[in-house]
Image 1 (cartoon, rainbow, N blue to C red):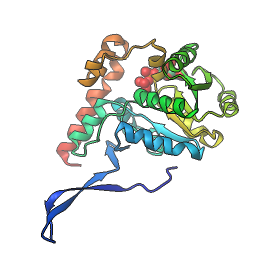
Image 2: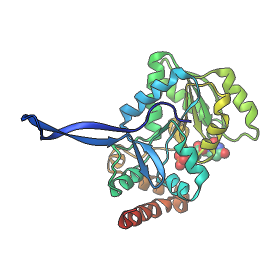
Image 3: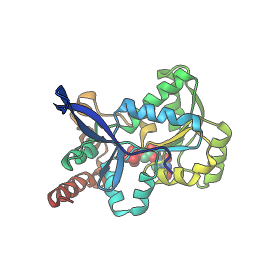
Image 4: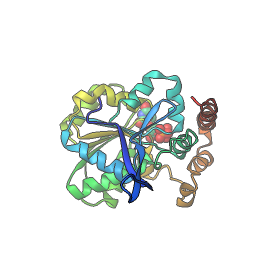
Length: 270
Ligand code: UDP
């Protein structure tokens, strides 16, 4: 599924050289980092956006996924989900847990690239370049509300269509997206439904890019508030979410389970 060369990058660092002058040591910066079986792109937010934008003109339905540690934990036991994630064109670490896991494994990712922030940057790009987005997912009415807020924030943005995520038959949804011909499709159905939808319909959807973004439309609509900035900065977004949505407790237990598994792997040196 992935196109283009992917390997290991390198950058010069200081050291002593054989020609007498100050030497160069080459520090290898991996382009892909494996965190418990999921291979993440080692990118900053700016790099993620640049790579995503470069995929747009191909119109081949390039896929972006944004797994957090809960989803990585699920993928550890679900090969199908893991393959779907690893088959995407861009795999972004949505969450402090994934970045912490990469550090514990001694292969640190550059930074967290939250799906909702990536989506917002993409909307800004589309607004500036006259591009369009199609919003799929959320409860009825959420995409409409999100679209209004998006256009308010990014004047010039074209939202060329939307549909809620509680459909029975996928065919009419796919047909509507095809007819709208968006540059970018936001697929906000929750994992793993959104990853399955994107992989299943990639051939039929000649969009520039589609991104699986979980509950991001709820955030854009304002029906689910994000944590205050200071909590995001301190990597406490998960704690805010737990207080606001305590019914997620069982699901959120996957975060400590994920970290425990990471520590175990590190101790085994595997
Ligand atoms: N959702 C949907 N269709 C479904 C199931 C879920 O559109 O069949 C939406 C749901 O309304 C919510 C999002 O998918 O907006 C999942 O949000 P959640 O916060 O659970 O996902 P996460 O961001 O944690 O992956």
